Image (cartoon, rainbow, N blue to C red; front, side, top):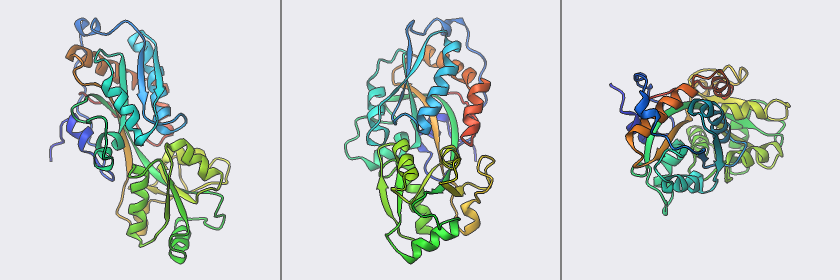
Length: 308
């Protein structure tokens, strides 16, 4: 089956679906497109708090993009409503190339069916620039349950005490929430959902032992396990991940799920085509920077640039 266009891929990719393979890189844009950019700092809006995956990738993109554009690029965090606060701010920004939006599957594909009052339209309010990457998930267990050394032990504990164990997420109906729910339902296990506003406070709750487990991007899981108190007990991927070598895939336990989240760069709708072309060229070049590639690799992924 032929892959959908990047716009359809960015809007239609859902939880558990692999990211559509990026289309071939187009020829370099000439000098007319280069002259179309505004001559002032560019900002990348992130809909989540500092410290989480979206913030990490946004800042790596800003650092790689600034020398390509020849102008400062800064990150502004606008957390709240599952990323909806930041998305609404990006949608209202001037369509002149000075504001970019780091969207994820939650903000672009899930929120419209999860929030009654959504102050932006994912399809009408944004112009896609490029895919960034697809980040696989892992399941971690915190120090509140020292006896849960592996994934079967976690499931068994949940079966013994329905609704007693807790799992964190970065919001109701977020990819983190839905991934964990699908894992639990596949095995007939019930746990109590504890939603947070962003990935970072949810991770802090895991480390503090305030919640028992969580599904989150593999890079975040790896950072949580460094001190040995928090354990990655499974990855939600087709096979093992290099950054979490001791965590088996959930598919090995009869759970047919490979889940994660994709990220993509957008501009506000009505941004002129020459500006979009220039931004696409610049973003693709930034994603070839060794420092950016390394940041994405540390999160268990590889850059996946595309054309609009």
